[in-house]
Image (tube, rainbow, N blue to C red; front, top):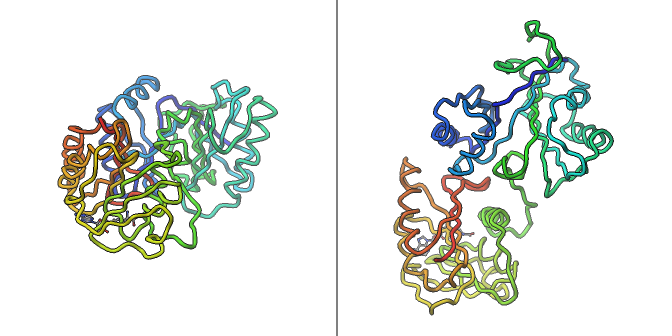
Length: 370
Ligand SMILES: C[S@@+](CC[C@H](N)C(=O)[O-])C[C@H]1O[C@@H](n2cnc3c(N)ncnc32)[C@H](O)[C@@H]1O
């Protein structure tokens, strides 16, 4: 076993297609930031020139759109025995974990690069949890952690410790060929990770009667933005066909006015509280201050859609949320996002624009009516 400690190293995660955009976002807040390694599935490690606190403060004041998740890499543990990799990680934890974890709810989030492994990911959690309880007085949890121990396991020995400081006082040159794999370990709060789910992957169980894959997009947005339904609330869903979002909203108890030029799934149409209006959204009219939530997944030019939403703003009660997917019709997503944002801002206060786990060639905007 050999391990190295780091101060300014991180693991970033974005959608595979938008890694370049995520890296640019990071370079905008630290121009000397350096990508160290690119791993599969939109994962990359990077080193900042700013100190940890300074970097995290800058990230907070310029929230990224495409970077879905980050976690610090406090230590890299190289292991030679593939059957004991989890045990090796636990042996190094007392030195890697510098945060006081006593009395805190701590989640272990383990991911790994594609490859052949002797141990399951669960093995890491099953060995680290007792260590947390017995040695550190922490409480292992899965949801709503105060702190997260992130692990990224790779069977590649090509990942070099670069700027790391040897953790066991062994300053001899590393013997790469001796190692079976490496674990990148970091400890952080959920807010520093951008998203509290492992790698930003917000997963839901797939129901048999799923009307469309789009359901997950709305479920993820509502979960992350904390949108719940109170009795008797009304939602307006624009661009609703075939009906995934309308179904999610009706299941959550909203009375839903569902608007699309195309027909709604007949099963969704029959659901309690659903009222379908077959119409172009730009011609839909309603009274003032009727709706508690406005959702829009229209797949046409986003700027035109934004104008429709500005015209429709008076239908939404003041302070109520808007969830909008911004699709990328051309090859300049940044321009599309900024134009849409500036149009929307005349009637709404934009809170977050983020590429969610379930977004493909689009991002999700969350705003509230001014
Ligand atoms: C991605 S789909 C929506 C999927 C839907 N959210 C769901 O969960 O099933 C986009 C929809 O926008 C609709 N659409 C496009 N332009 C529209 C317009 N001007 N007015 C209303 N609907 C429109 C399309 O007919 C299409 O059904």
